[in-house]
Length: 103
Image 1 (spheres, rainbow, N blue to C red):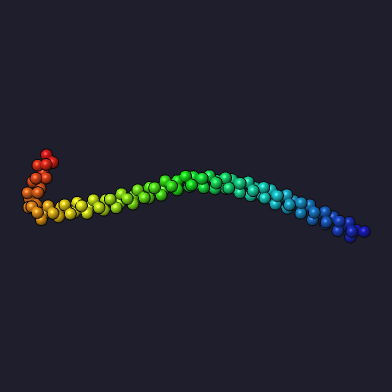
Image 2: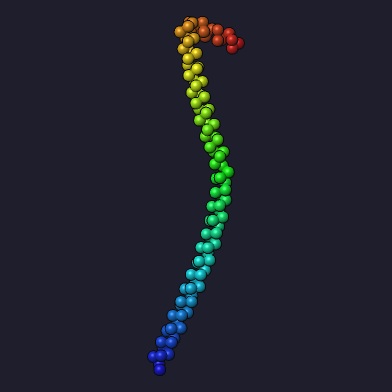
């Protein structure tokens, strides 16, 4: 009889311990669900923001590429003009004429 009471007591303790663990796990699950929901909302907001900035970024990249190629073209024209002026007339005369034009 004593052994049965001891076994019942141990079983009650085991059930209490199990309930405590279940409650802790349920609390942890609720916290993880809350964190998940917050992260999901943040992700959706970031996704929406990226969808809006995507076309703008593409347009800006195209504009930058276009400006860079235009700069290369202008630099080529400038060096070509400088080369033709230095060979076509004396550099001293060219400098003097540029100085008088600037004044």
